[in-house]
Image (tube, rainbow over all chains, first blue to last red; front, top):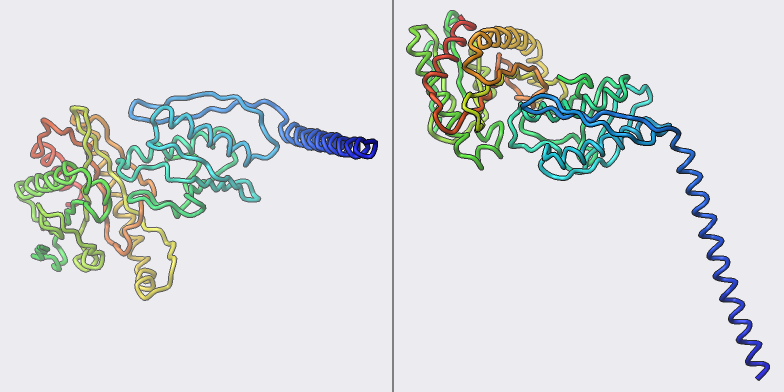
Length: 173
Length: 205
């Protein structure tokens, strides 16, 4: 009987010890992550999202915690622009920004989407408006950007009208 | 069926214009799904041609596609050989507004050449010719814009842009893309054909 109780006690001890180790591990991981996330954001920023259409230019202002990395801010900005554009039915399908890279000089930005934000059946005028909207949003936020490459899955996108092999001037057209 | 009229084309003093409705060559999605736009582009081109003929000028009009058909031919080398004063590609889209919209775009050929095939080497040798054509195209586009702006009450919007359009590879002659937003009802093709023809005649003569 005593032998049985001591075995039971040992098993319970192991279980309790395991739970405590698990809790400590979880706590340490959470603590580390929170430190990283807090350290990467330093202040709250404001940015303007632009939407050109037939009637002119519409603006939405958003606030977000800015990062020390410009590409990260641009990624967030473009993601927000895509979300707003989708809600406004400015673009036809919900599109995600996959990645944003800025060259070492900080003048050229490469933006890759999961799908082209231009419907190939749109008139050129509409396509120019949509592209100008993204360019204006990026340029207003970060004025040292000069050239913008739009990619789909990290490759130039195919459109019957727009030549995506050449970079777009960030000041728009 | 291809109909190529080559009358007086190779004479030095001749003025020749190619009118080309863009269907599957430029924008396959649009014209295969929306027949109105394809038909509107062809109707607009026919009205323009008629107006040019009525203007009693010595302008030769060349078709590389027979109006009324959808058959499309990529004839960059043929167009270069014909060496027209101006090549105009027409595209149309439907709008709900009563007044049409007009967009004038210049084709600019990128010097980016992804491969080194025989055809690409030919393109490189044509770069200088292209640059001359590019200047001519820009001049024509600017003049056309000025002329159309004076008839502003006919249009709800006139767009004029040298936005980087997709390359018309191999074409080294002046080339413009005219994209017109056309109301599906009540649009007078002949009136607008005459309006555009008047502007074209002025810039190429």
